[in-house]
Length: 528
Image (cartoon, rainbow, N blue to C red; front, side, top):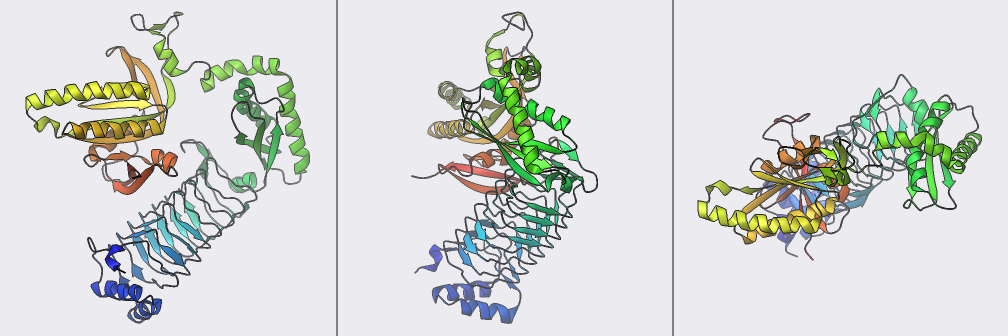
């Protein structure tokens, strides 16, 4: 085989001798050539190595520097990376069993889409690294120091985390079922939407954690309260034979809050899942026992009966919760509908009431023409006229929520992330046909929509708007740069390809300075 179809020559900065021995080992299909060489030499350097699609079963890469390397779609098994260095390294879509990362130093790296069963990270230091969507079942983290890393939607079930430090990590929507966490500090971590059925917590420390979707609402714990609150869990399944009405669906969070207030010394419950849409008939609640002396089954039945009793008394529920639903959840007046009912001259609704700003989950798309001011005046006018006509037509087909100018760029929002991405791809093609370059910055999250009386149309504001605006200037020409929020929603979508990068903003925003290196992703349409 031609080895250079699998190993890239460009950007390699490691030892030429080390690379040549590795290539010789691969070509002869003899792992012992490399293993013997590495053992005799000790430390090796494969910095900047890009390799894809090869098998490294049984290889010993201990004490090897993989800084700035790209290890892509590799097959691994009983592979050793003990005491190795991974800095700004991409280990993406690799598979294998019993892979050893013990005592390795891993920082600012990407383990995206990897599937490593029974991997060991004992004694390792892991900082600012992303394991988004990684499958790390039965993994062992003993005396491991993990800081500011993301395990979003990662599978860590049946694993062991013992004697470790897990400070300020992101476990949102991760599968922590049947995991054992002992003598470990998890302070400052995010746990929204985790699966934690049958997990075991022993001597776990936590000063504070975040359980909301965006990881912004701080929950403080006194000594031992985190473990006592979350160590004993089980599920309660409540079936609605006639389906769940919209009123019952929206009232459920407030029912749960009332039960938690009433039984705060016994247990706490959270909504774990809703099976199907509004007409579905099964709700799963996660029950957290606080008083371990109580009979769990008795408490389960008690809570179940309370909720079903409320269901039978819908009129009472309606009177009790309808005002709170309108005020807290904004279920009765949708922001977009309100804006379109706006009487622009009087700044009021048609019925005479004033509309406050509304918050909505939106995909925010910023785009700008690159080096456009350097083009001749006549060329600029023709391009702008064509762009505005084609972009406006595209926006109408994509059902945008808002559209506006932002400085010399343009901003567009939509309810659906995939719609926003497809819009960006279409506009990029339009710009290229017109002979000009374009760049995009896209984020997703809670966004304030209000009526801009000066511009006489809806306008947007919020942290995610600012973040998308800062992504756009650092994006490469004719590319689309997305935030982690967008990537989290799309990384399993087979229609797109992603390239992970570290970026620095040209201007600071709230919580991000010009010196901070943050994770972002280039997105493109997967070739058919």
